[in-house]
Amino acid sequence: MDRFTVRLSRSLLAVTTLLTLVLSSVPVRAQKQSVYTPITLTTDKEVADNLTEKDIPTGDGGFARDYVVQLNAGDQVAIDLTSDNFDSMVTLMSADGATIGQNDDGPDGSNNSLLFARIKETGTYIVRVRAFGETGSGAFKLKLSKLRTTK
Image (cartoon, rainbow, N blue to C red; front, side, top):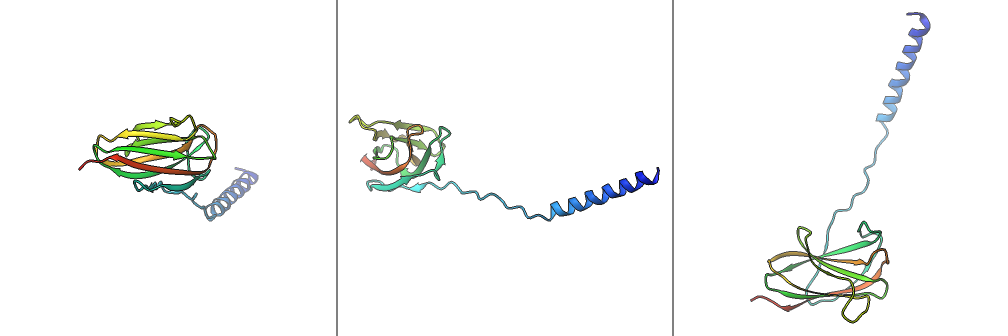
């Protein structure tokens, strides 16, 4: 090898080593991850809350907020969701995410939601509050009432 090639090889090795050292010493910050923690829902007590862009992305351009509730086999429940800020949609899901039922518009013709369901298995259930499509966010009221319970 001629002198030029040897010098070039040594220079490239030195630059590569220096670059490797610099890049390996740069601190890397992990992206802050929030843990999925649904809010506990108490039966027969109205919750006043807000749906925001910080909630769960639905994939349809909107957001959802989840509540968790313990229900027993044989319970018959009514879930009432009202909002003056968005076209509400309520979904009742089992703990594994299977949809038990959902409602977009209440029987009164409004954009509020009213869902009736009969619980077949004792366990943890999720009540999901969201806006229909990309219709928005804002204040809402949610109430789960047991119409009939098991003894």
